[in-house]
Length: 395
Image (tube, rainbow, N blue to C red):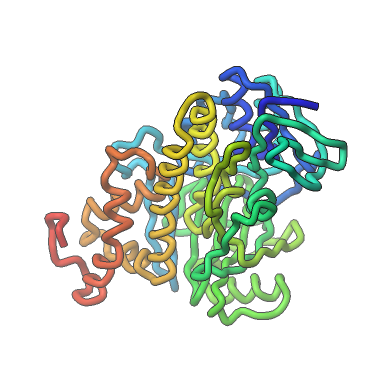
C-alpha cells in the first residue's frame, strides 16, 4: 500500500501534519496503534497553538477556556494572564481531554483526505520506504514519526539521546470535585511548587481536573504511584486547598526519564516531528505547541522548502523552553514570579507571560528570549536585594 508520506501517530501532531500535507497535494497514510484513545491525564494548550487550530479548522468550542496560569508555593501565589504578553495575537487557550481532542483531530485529517490505518509498527526500512506493521507493509516516499515521546523511529535509527540533567518521573490521574480558590480564575492551570518537584492541576470544567506530580531524582517522595502523588499533595497547602474533598476517578499513570531529543530530525527518506523528535519537561505545557508548529513548518519544508532551516527553527524554539525549564528547577522562575506585585516590573511580567503563551518562534518578539536568557541574573538580584532595584528594565 503506497503513499507519498506515511506518518506514524494520529495524535495532534500527526493529524496536523497530514492535513497540511494533503492540502499541498501529497497522499498521506496515518498509522495509529490505538483505535480508541485512552483517557490520559489531560493537556493544557498554549495560546500560540491557535494558529494551527484556525488553519486546520479545528473547533475548540467544546473545551474549557484558559485565560492564564497560577503558580503557587507554600501559600503564596501569583497569576499571569495571557493578555499581558508582548503584542498578543491570542489571549486565551483551552484545557483539553486528549481522548476527545485526538478523535477530533482524526476527523479533521480524514476530511482533509488522509487515510487512517490502525496497526502497530513492527519494523522499518527507511531506505526502502517500508514500514512493517501488524496489518502488513506500508510504503511511502518518506516515513515520518509523529507518534509521541516513545520516539520509536528515533530509537530504531539510534538517534535518540536522553537528557542527563532532566531525569524526572511523573504520576498523574484525574480528580472530581476540584475547587478554584484565591486568585484562580475559571480555566486557569495551577502549578504548585514543592521541594524537588511540582504539582499540576488542569481543570476541564464541572470540578473535573487532571492532577499529577513531576519529581526530580532528589525528590523525597517514595512508594507506589498513589503514595507519591498523595505525598506530594500533603507537601503543598496550595494543592490541598484545591483538592480538599476531591475524589480520584482514574487509575494512576506513571512515567519516568522522559526528557530526550534526537541528534537529527530528518534524513533523505524520514523525518521526526513533535515529541517523537524532542520531548522536554512538561512544566510549561509546551509539547503540543512544539508539535503543531513543527508539523506546520515540516509540511512547508517537504513541499520545496528547506528542511535544515525547519529543524534549526524548531530547535531554537524548543531551546527557549529548555532554558526556562532549567531556571524553573533552579528556583529562578518562582523567585521572580513571587516578587510582590508592586515591585514586579512590567517587562518581567511581559516576558514571563509571552513564554507561558508559547510565543517563542516570532523573531520580532524580543521579550520571551530576553527573559529566558536573563532570568537567572534577575532572580539573583531578587535574592540579594529582596526585590528588583531598577525600574527601567535594565536591572
